[in-house]
Amino acid sequence: MQTARYTQAPEGKNISYYAQISDLQGRYGQANAAMMADPDQSGDPTEIANRQQLALNVADDWVNGFLRLSKYSHLVDTTGIVDSTTNEPPELLTTAAVMYAGWWLSTSHGVRDYDKDNRPMNRYYADFQTAEQIMLRIQKIDTFKLNVEA
Image (tube, rainbow, N blue to C red):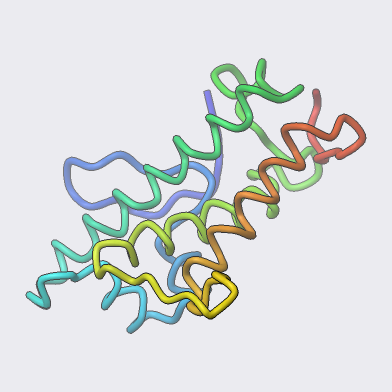
């Protein structure tokens, strides 16, 4: 059973594990996080919260997919990936999950800006690339250590 800091999830929705809506808002700002989660510009706070939560749940699955192919795979579905000093998910995984969720939310707006060298020019895709690099390092480099009981 995974134990982590939880916030109240929208009615009928699962609570995400690695990052919460407050983490998403902390990275991108409350107004930006709401705008990214509202592609139809309805302004409906329930729809916005539900979409933010969905992005965080998708990010959980994405992070777990990498972790299942790492030396931490046995922890994903048992005790959970928990920092041994804080008893919460490691901050590095929270950061990767938030960055992925932000990118995921931005894709509904069709954000695809690249420079002449095909490098991303927007923050969201750059965040996705950073998150992916974090997870690849955790997955592939045996010397990379999280402060968890592996």
